[in-house]
Amino acid sequence: MNIKKAAMTASKYLFLVLFLCLLVAILGAAQTLRR
Amino acid sequence: MKLPESLFSRLFLAYLPFMVYPYGFFKAGVAALWIVVFLWITVAFFWFTRRIFPDRSLKCAFFLWLIVWAQAVWTLTKLPPYWIVSVFFLAPVSFLEDTVKPGHVRVFSRQVPKYFFERALAGIGFAGFVMLLALVRGVGEKHLGIHAFEQPAGMLLVIAAVAFLWKNQPYQGRR
Image (cartoon, rainbow over all chains, first blue to last red; front, top):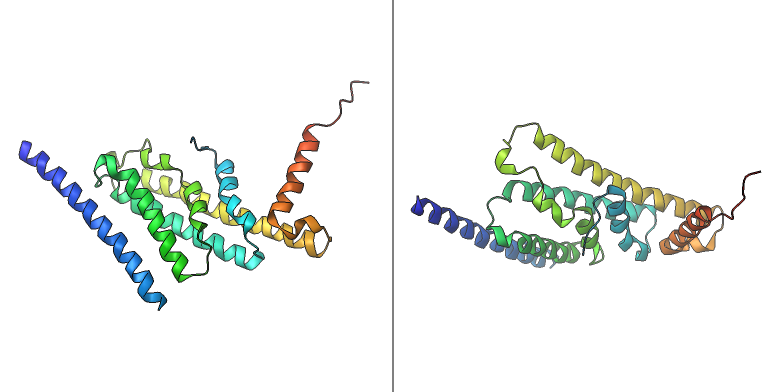
């Protein structure tokens, strides 16, 4: 049970990191497309 | 700050940035469409991912999402940088805490079309509101020659003055 909970939390934070990567990618894409 | 929940108040708040845009009917319509499309993208994205975020970081993620898109769209199109304010007012932060918890809702249940129908209606209402005010402004300025209507803020000032006078008519008494 504890392991399951820990895995859930870890995957949530992993998703947060992926989300931040997505945001950085959006900014980078906008900069590249402008040139 | 407590944001109003009623649709018209939110439409009006979302219209506030348009008051400083020197846009005609066509450009105002295009800007409103951009805002509405982005509102729908935001609502759909957070509807499906709301549960995956860690609880405390959801609101920060929402604001970061708005800021990043504001910057990206600003560099790509000619929209003014504060177009995102309209999106923010159309989708108040409380939509992140809606009573319909996605955990209790299946993807193909009836709640989902209802939820998105309300958001779609808000978007269409906003686009219609912006275009209607732009149309009124164009007609008042060009055909009726009202100089105050040259700026959107002037038009709202006139409308507000008329509404104020209408509500405060002198007491006539009963005859």
